[in-house]
Length: 594
Image 1 (tube, rainbow, N blue to C red):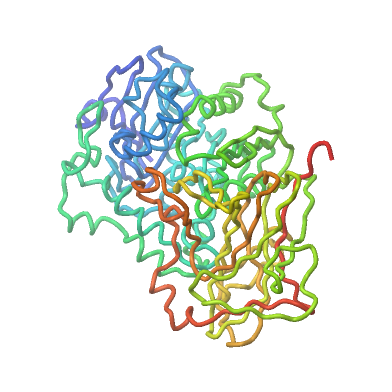
Image 2: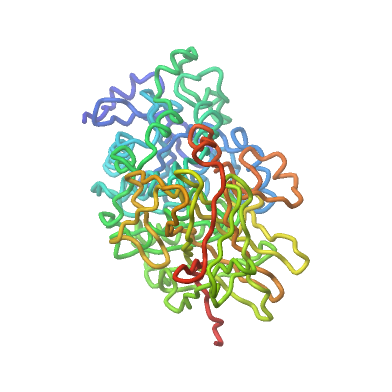
């Protein structure tokens, strides 16, 4: 890999250095990939010469696109919730899901933003989340670690796309990668993004045309313009629609072509035990269907000796830019990239914001995940009275529902005392179908004393339920080595069709959650034949937000090609009684005084 010389940079038609807002900014810096492709980066440096630690982001949303220009609704909501975002910054350099350089450069960091292949100012074939991208990230890390302005220590930060690439880069162990901070980012693309329980999620079908193709390299003059340079964020050339299509791998068609966890998906999953660098994994309780499973598993299963888990609530974007989020990142990186003895290494390994109704969160420090003091509680799905109960049905009973309908609900009677549920959950069901398959959608819901559902602002939906889980019955095979009582791990490597009318035992993973249930509130588990649907009143954000889909945040599972009614229609029956004891395993956290 040949690095550009000073003469090369002088001759480069795009590269230049300017001073903006107290920073030296190098625009469109060429970074060579191992195969010779030139990636383009913007580099934000302190004015004073020296060697500084580097914070790197690599991703697909265009390094020149201002946050507000690309995501005006999210920008408005963020400033409403956290006006301090602009207290120390002009906001001119603030981009979607990447750190604001005006808050890090004055504190002695270099911030590097790289456009991924086929995005923004980086040419090449647009092919999201592929091994070539992960190799490119490593090339960028080594480039950053060997510049004259670098102290040789490179950290990675950023949300979602910019978090997911961190897991994959870290398992490759590039020399100069020193610490990572993946904020709300999956680590297993099959189970956490493309297929939930083996059922295809339609999120990528929605995401691609609005968040990525709008900034593909070659959109050029048809794209937004940088507020700083005035240049188009979609690259220096303008290509036809036919040329753009020829320069990308069709995303949705690719997802649909790989319905199993095959070699394609295995190549995209992070090898978590290989990760050795210090990490801070930041999850969001409200991210069901996209990110938090990757953050929890990344913390638990990574090989790092120095690792921390932080869990917050709220929207997908705002907490990262808040004073809380910036301070958290600075303390972590100051310790590992600058060597400061700021006490970070003595911080408890798990930092939770415990969730209460009314969007209230209380910080609490813990030492492990799941919590060691968890009282794993079995609640039986009692079909005789539709309750979640401590005792199972005494007699055999079967209850059916429409296989693509609202399903059945089981409620826990309201308690006179406060109850906290924090951790992963799992359900065991006994199911038969009229057809050769069935899709199960599990929704954990909370209702106040008046019967109104309690939801939360999620990462991509303003009305997110307490928890969700999914399973396609023909994907029921478990990996016995990786399955835990509270986390079934399905192989998703083969399809085992059902014999109509035969009863099958199914284990369903429900993603980790946290809720403190006040006295008088009622917990319910729904076993559905379709996605959860929030039926309460909608606020303005829910009415206008792109991914707001009645509680799923765009992660719907209704693609007709994937769920033909002749296979997934008809009736599904739940069975209970005798040797069959369907139940929900719940992580109850005892009161500190108990």
